[in-house]
Image (cartoon, rainbow, N blue to C red; front, side, top):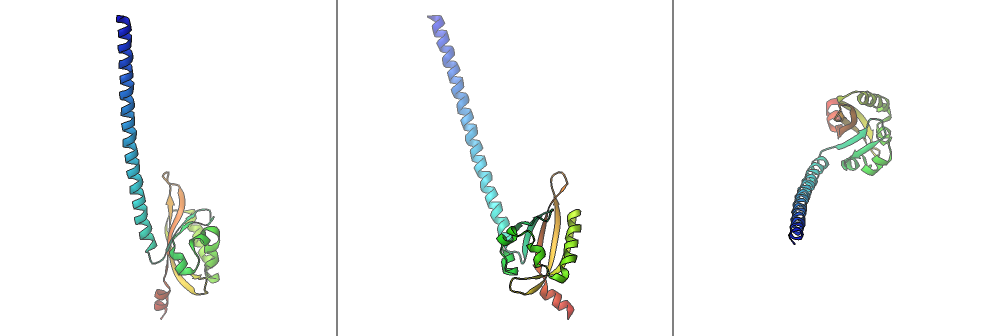
Length: 171
């Protein structure tokens, strides 16, 4: 009897410990889920703030690969500025170059190649032709962004219309 009671007490103690451990694991998982949900909420909030900021700039922003494979991201303002939407930019890897005025295309392409081979920031000024035929002078501030290992990863840029400024300088 005593051996049976001892075994039963041992089993019950073991079961209680397993149950206690399971409860602690569940509490830990619940706490992790709460922390994960909060981190996701904060990330969505930061993304909304960033998107609001980017979409209110007086020009358009872009992110492109170093291999000239086109734009990975173009902000919506590109459509009001040039008449082509972000989807058109993502679908046509050569749209940026195609929209540069023919007299500026070769120079701008070469400046872009030089930028992509190095690191740092560069400001370009050239003309672009909008869908409706308007010619705009733009200033393109571009930077090569590096990854965690310090290797060039992609280009981020901001293009703004400087036509009025350019015309004022010429007068």
